[in-house]
Image (tube, rainbow, N blue to C red; front, side, top):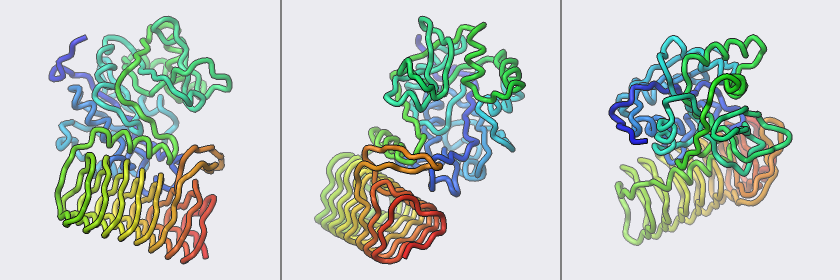
Length: 405
């Protein structure tokens, strides 16, 4: 179906109210949707995808640390959107969240999850089926972690959240076309104690045809901290090649690399894209940056240090002769010389539950400080504001504010 992006009048509801507790140390001061991947907050990709597809009227459902969202996006004008914020005092579930938007909605509307990385094609595929209720589905190799969709032909029969027995690898992406008739079902399910959209849609599907849309667009979901690395690598696939700042003689750059304003890359450094360096970064002499790595604003990388497939958020500082692989370092993390955050398989504990992760380095929360020669075992979670003395070995889970000698 051909679409004229300029003719779209449908509103979109973006779910961005939750904390995202399963993100471990990275939501201490920001909501999950504002965690940066590819040097942009996750939710920014949804906003840009909507605008690219002609949907500019956006209702942003906010709650936890909502000021971080509002101060960044403001009225949406800088992103080509018109954003209205609706604050939730309590997050009971996705259906409850959508219910709060009812006074601002007329006719059919879109619903998107603000913590999934999507592109314009994903939104466009959903809009191609916007003449009736619809849900975007995807094949997944982890269907047991999502809502598994049961189909009859092209229509949804039901959605089963995190099923014990997986009968299909088709999952619900949390992207919908809905119409006002759903609010009666939301209210009915709420009376029975169900506040999630999958439960509502499963009941709605008994009387309403809900189309299952298989999109070829980008959809990458962030449930756990290690998922951020997949989102980051995906975001960097569309990276623009930009050279700003000061690049000294003897620097080697291969592939697509964005170097922000005010950056300084010292002689002998080796950069292999895709890489994104935010403004004000300094890369020391003979440092090595390998795919797929994002450095936020004012990040400092010492001489002879190697960073690979990692996210270092704003103001992080990694000293000389360090190795950081498959890791996420929060804003303001300071690691002195000789940090070793190598990568490998690990059982990672999040919210008291262990997860087998095939390849992971360190997950270090904001404003943590590590002394010289600190080693971090694969899959270690260091919560915010922790301190580690020189020579310490970190493993397992380090509590927020802890001191490791």
